[in-house]
Amino acid sequence: MIPASNLFSVYQEAKALVEGGDLKQAADICRQILDNHPNFPYGYHLMSSLFCATGTYSNALTFALLAISKDPSVPLFHIQQGQILFSIGENEAAAAAFQNAHKLEPESPYPLLLWADTQAQQAKFEEAKRLFALARSASDLPEIDLHEGLCLMMQGQLEYAEKLFDRMITRAPENEWGYIQKGKLYTERRKLVEAEACFAKALKINPKVYEALHGMALVCEAQAQNELAISYAMQAIQANPKAWESHMHLGSMLMAHQQYNAAEQILMQAYGIKPDNLYILQPLIVALRQQKKDKEAQEVLDHALKVAPENPVLHFFKAMFAGENVATMPKDYVSSLFDNYADRFDHHLQQVLAYKVPEMVAQAVKANTKTTNLKLLDLGCGTGLVAEALRDITSHRVGVDLSPKMIAKARTRELYDALHVGDIVDCMLGCGEVFDLVVAADVFVYVGDLQPSLNAARAVLSNDGLLIFSIEKEDVSSGYVLKTTGRYTHSPHYIQKLAAEEGYAVVRQQEGVLRTEHQTPVAGIFYTLKKTKAH
Image (cartoon, rainbow, N blue to C red):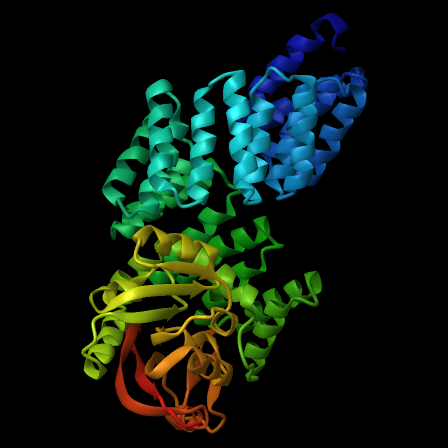
């Protein structure tokens, strides 16, 4: 029996145990508190914290609401509710919770700071700026520099964000988060040595902080320090076993080194952590199929179809398994696939896959025009590797990609006049510009039926404008085939026929190696089509 007079001190003891990671002992104390004192609101608050620590947010929210029902006058309870809602992406509801906390404690900057975060996540940047200013007027805490810096990063204002992170580091040098966010910023700007130094400083302060370990894994992989990258990814998983992103990263690195069994084990863990993230399926299925575990791969897919029977991505996989031809991949699938790939995209393509497509595209352009002020539309632009390769012969560059994270990476190169997140066909039909050059480098391997793309490209090309793209080659009567790799191959005859039908002349057709996978060259063809005047 816990006496009422000792209740708050026992709660404080259990709270310290949660913060120290001793969840079992904290849970035992919490149950004693609630069994003996069911009206003690901090007991429900503590139970909510325990569920947050295990990533069980639905239960965490239930207990947070119980704490509020017992005593709605405590700002801390509303803040906890808001933080849980924020964690599951319920930004508007989170904002309302933080507003309630602010009404109860108007002199505190914390509810305003967290409220501002919800606005930034909804791209309401002016409102976020207003709330950050109000928070500073309440108390100019170093944490405000951190949060406002993150908001500026979302807007691509990296220099201003860096100044705020530096300001926080100066004011709170023993707080690891300033170094962590500065490390992430340097990673975005491809200043990898500087990023590594920032994460190292954060780890010196707190050796077990997940975000610094995960950041180190990404930076080490980008510098081809593969063993270190795998080591840091493993440490990140130990620091936060529920972090599916690190499981995905480690699984992908193991896949790249053909360690399929180890990748399978890690990716299975990721799928168990995040069963609603169905895009974990793709590398998991590939890992299973590479080991000829077709039955297990089918079982994973069948289970997922029971969870989400209408999901178009799963039906795409089902068709791929059955050898059916599908005209194109689901947009959400492609977007998520490359969002998860964005942080290691450049290194993996250039160092692991020996990717030479941008250079081959540049050769194709220079073989067909001597102009050095071309207007470029870069379809599926990714991180901007093609724009980099064409920098010296283009004067105006527009990029489009389905992946928001790829677009964010491309923005840091500062090569594009405009960048758009969206479907390539939709962009071409709605952009209202005319281009001398449209490039789709290693993009059509994710599209089966190319007619809509070629038709839309012709609409945005100037007279005699060039469309340059690559395909994976296969002589098939159907024109294109969806392979078990999750990519499409196209036949040369299909391309020739479609080009003529859509008003193009094929001016160059060059075979080459797109990349190297599992030590095997992937054969492709680079096409240069010229828009004809009559169509």
